[in-house]
Length: 75
Image (cartoon, rainbow, N blue to C red; front, side):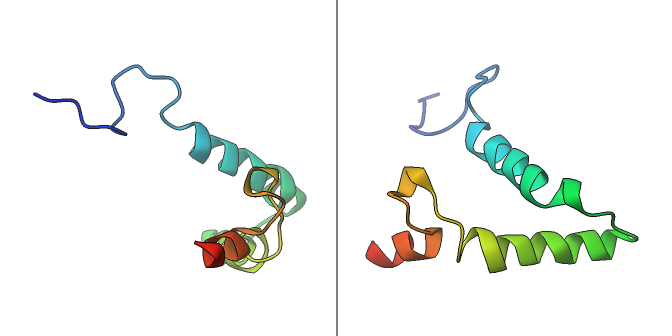
């Protein structure tokens, strides 16, 4: 079976690095500062963090200190 570029391999510790870094950042910046009464409240807070802050206002060093939305508009 041919290996497809970008596909993960079993036991590759770097497979989820980007996702795990994002989750850590979200927890540090938002989750640990709130106490949620319900799952629905937590789900809404996560959505608002991603769509209202992370993608539109938070600048990223890896993107030349642009927000993800600004960077995407350049592509």
